[in-house]
Amino acid sequence: MKIQDTKAIIMAGGRGTRLMPLTKKLPKPLMPVLNRPVIFYTIDLLRNYGINNIGITLMHMPQMIINSTNQNFLGRFDYFIEEHPLGTAGSVKSVSNWLDQTAPFIVISGDALTNIDLDGIVKAHLSSNADITMAVKEVKNPALYGVVKTDKDGFISEFLEKPKNGEIDSNLINCGIYIINPQILKKIPKNIAFDFSRDLFPLILKSGKKIFTYKLDGYWCDIGCIEEYFKANMDMLNEINGLNMFNKNREGLLNTAIRRTFLGKNSFIGLKVEIGNNVVIGDNCYINGNISLSDCIIADNTFLDVSCHNVIATPEHYIPIQVSHQIFQKPQEKPQIAVNNGYN
Image 1 (tube, rainbow, N blue to C red):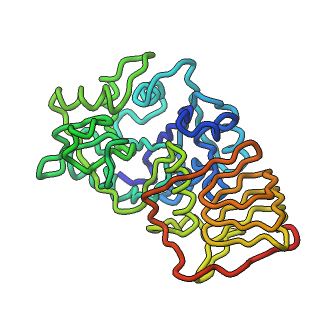
Image 2: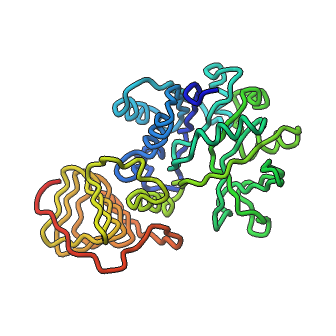
Image 3: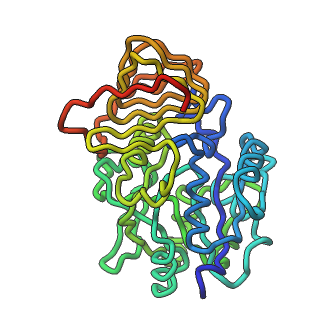
């Protein structure tokens, strides 16, 4: 089995309720990371491995996602719109006829940022003879995720979806990336809400089927909440853990020894604006005044005349960020003043 022949399903139906108010008018998969919709990085990842048979499951604001992907990528995608919520497993079940009935397929989230080795997880799945292979990662605080426990051979022995603190005795979490044998879809009921974590995986384990784990060594971040969304932007800006693969020849990305900045198109930066480290500025912004910026995201079309530090600023909102687990590197010396008295 060649990875180029593998079909992939991108799940892009989420509402992004924990990202409100940022997702009030924008679906979660189109949330920009370094000024580019997060689903675009998932598409890039698949195509980097030669995977062009891509289906996208949609529900919330589907036409916005269809228009955006069609306008920015050459080639064809297959779109599947849910008429009512089907859950993660249910949405994949609904596209059964599109899938190869004998070959394993990839399921990956359209609202998480990752550079997972897809060739590695496919090979691990085939060699394990498992029914499902799940990408997992070690994290410091697994309480927000699905926690998995494995046996000595890497097969899942227990799965807990967002457990309470007293129930946690593993730091391995489910990354929402799977290689699935098509026969497993028969266990998913039609036309009802059915979730991978809450419904299918416990059912699989009870029936004696095998779920193998593949430890993800690269980067992975679910942008499901404001803090993680901010973190993903800062990590991409600093090209943490191999994320530079997405930024080759990227316009607007400025790197110096002490400062990382991204400047969008047609944005005006006044002469008195001091730009520090870890600043992401979107398109068509107007930033002026005796102000300073650092550790912030300025969204497209934002007028700004106040300082921003640990903040996401949009045309409508000014959202302070409290990030206690940033992994991007802070500069060791004070950033120099950087100004632009024209349009970028």
